[in-house]
Image (cartoon, rainbow over all chains, first blue to last red; front, side, top):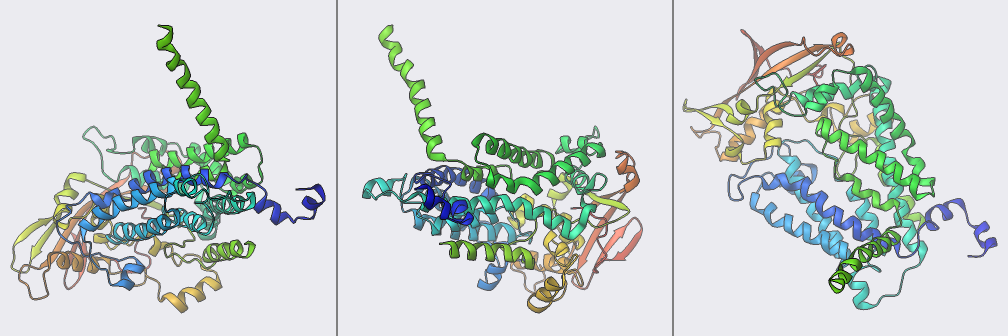
Length: 322
Length: 207
């Protein structure tokens, strides 16, 4: 692109279309797909912790689309069929085989498995919401045109950089604002009271820690780290301030060009999710796999391959020396 | 292409503005709400007692235990039924749905969704119906479950103690939810009270 042309492009054009090289989208799809298989397995494995041919539980509160479709009870063996289909579709998506069809299958499987899991007791969890939004962007993009089995088999021409860039930038916007909207929701519903004293964090630490009761020695059965932390409201308040700052400023990552700074930010976000899991059993612990969308994974892949080759070379030479 | 991206974000972020909470759209994380209350009330579980099951009485007078294996549901879901629904507590989305509504949100909910789910809670009725339907017991079946019981300890922490990091002095009482075909009650010590059904029935309780 010549300099005058670059000048004539709008901020939105540069923001959306000038961020990633052409081969990034396929590489992100590959790593995202691998992470997705693991993530979704652990999201829905509880559907398999029942007797496949046992009682058909009548849902207490079917999720809205089950209600519309008249699905009012669980046929447990279906989940045992859907789970391998879901994982296979994730792997096909990752390896670029029938990519778009695989996305559709993944979405349908998510609808089913989530519907079952959340209809037993009526708690609709949010852990698939960002995944769904990101998969829609993969579906609308040319993510299967590179870095995959079909692309290699059919020798498809490479996509252009802007075609790779816009879906990844849209994914980044969605992910970054997922945190920002979480802060807005807290302030909208509870105001700063959410953070005051030990805040909602202390309340949740306590309720989660005692959920399974105490041992005969007086320790909590689960989440002892959370229980210990609940005794320190000042420390929790500081953590609350960190959460506030993190959720408020995470969208800044959209304007950071340095991959090192971006890496630092997503490491912080990963620590946030891991802490939520180990302290309060909030099940977003594998969610950080979505952060691959913030990096040029094609460059990373080349780097990784070169590293792996470097580690192989000495072992090949070693027998000759001996 | 820019229009497609714009439409995508108008739908997703527009749902946040309108507080739509139906998968795949949502406006709020699970733990977004905290209501002012002088005390924090939590439930102290007893895994062994819970997994032993609900104490269930059939129409023919027989008493049986109904646990997660009988219902064939995962333990996490069973825990919610036992700890929450049996005590007429709903899922978090019901509790936060109508909190701090802006006029546009009020219009949306009252026009398209209906009354506040906290106004007339009947999670206990849904639970009893589900259990009977799971076992295939109709309304005239002598095997049908006509009474369910679930017991839990409740711990009430004073906010002033929590602010000092003192978790050693909660007031603890044992409550038993009693669900029948004609009504539901909570037994606290020697007292039997009607199951709370209204909007203020859960003030201070943290799930």
